[in-house]
Length: 272
View 1 (tube, rainbow, N blue to C red):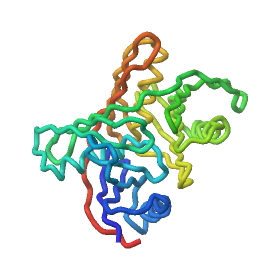
View 2: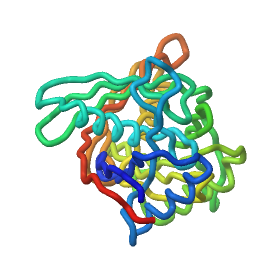
View 3: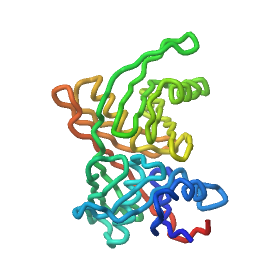
């Protein structure tokens, strides 16, 4: 029996497993829980006891990747457990897979849900790449983090041809192995994204309804290109919004944050 909480960060449905299992079982359990015949979600994280004494909780994702929406989901659950009331705030430090340092989060209770602000990892490398795809010149942003990378493609159509380009870059242009990698189509006209995320360990590839790391990466890449701070409200495929901020100074990204609304969906036991 798997004890879990299912959380809704902008419809990027996330399962957090609350009881303890060996990490070698995480990919198998995640696949079973994500199945439509089971609890069903886009991703699974496992709540652990942290090793750092100053951390409030630990979170290890199904493939050892960093996932901002799962971080936001755990923060909402911790605020629920702490009985944070409407209008009140709480701060948490989390030990998270894919991050070399503790992740700082601020939670504010808003009616039935929670407004979460997360301090995101700083990218290791940012640069522009180019390729010729089906006789068309394509420019895209490549942003690398510790253990994962993300590509931003300017695209206002989000059509099937653009999706094929995204898959081509995901599988042909990102040659290094990462715990997770993603390609996001960005419409400057609509200020919207369409993120494709691939997790190596579980061999899953999903067009997500919402993506925190894609939103943060977009702000990072725009700040890098414009050489200035960027704050942007980004429409997700779900129709919800994530606010992303990247602070730029002297040629580097100094700080990255995202803010989003999160709702708890259910607490329960799954038979897997």
